[in-house]
Image (cartoon, rainbow, N blue to C red; front, top):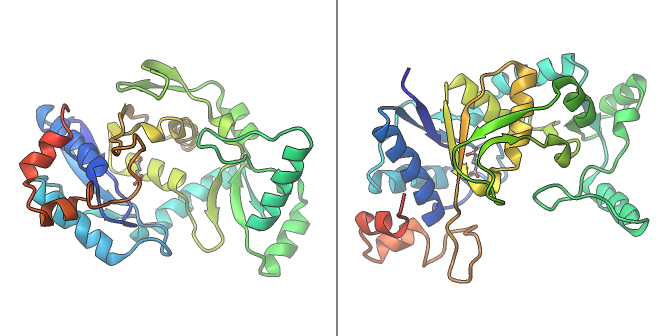
Amino acid sequence: MPPVFRFAPSPNGYLHLGHAYSALLNFDLARRRGGRFLLRIEDIDPTRCRPEFEAAIYEDLAWLGIAWETPVRRQSEHFAAYRAALDELSALGLVYPAFESRAEIALLVAQRDAAGGWPRDPDGAPLYPGSAGALSPAARQRLIGEGAPYALRLDMAAACARAGALGWTELGEGPAGEHGEVAAHPLAWGDVILARRETPTSYHLSVVVDDALQGVTDVVRGQDLFHATGVHRLLQHLLGLPQPVYQHHRLIKDASGQKLSKSTAATGLRELRAGGVAAAEVRRLVEPI
Ligand code: GLU
């Protein structure tokens, strides 16, 4: 079976040099290894994703000389698949609704910080500080019946206890030089959100479901997602999904050494194109690949 690579941008902004690097790396690896290259549109968040950004993704990638298989998988068209995975995890007793608002969570974190400190996840966000996991089934039903907003969270301790030790094959490099057989540390993320009342999925859930459904064998993506891979491995294990190999790549930085987060005149592919830069020059800018 040929290896399957994918580039999976979210259409919540215009592509920049960091995206170009990731897309070209995936595309080149697929070609070099006689594999397939897929494009996936990760558009589960309707408040941030816009059709003009999606259209721009197609235009910018084509300009770079990248060709992808069609039809393109758009996550917003597959909520049923994510819900089915969520139902499987719920049936294992690993999912619970948490009803605290963002403000309530911030207050709980502040209280815990003041009382001696509260842990942060690998991205620097506080772990979930609430105790909704302890609510009785009747209390949950009552709150849901009252129409209270909620997030569905993974009971991380129970999930990790069920899964045992996990790891993955890292062909690239983590932020601390991790390479080869590396251990997954999903507990470091606390009770992550898997879905919300109004959005029946999350980044973590949809990415593992789609990588499996699309037969992705090689996940090649930025180093900023290295630690999230621990959560992905856990979900793959719990859902009985195959395990891809991972290759986390360096991040393209701006002139001040910061990771690119949005496109600017100096880094946006559209802006560079409008300024007369050729696609071949963008390729050179993001090499060596
Ligand atoms: N959609 C994610 C992003 O744009 C990438 C997901 C992935 O490659 O796993 O950052």
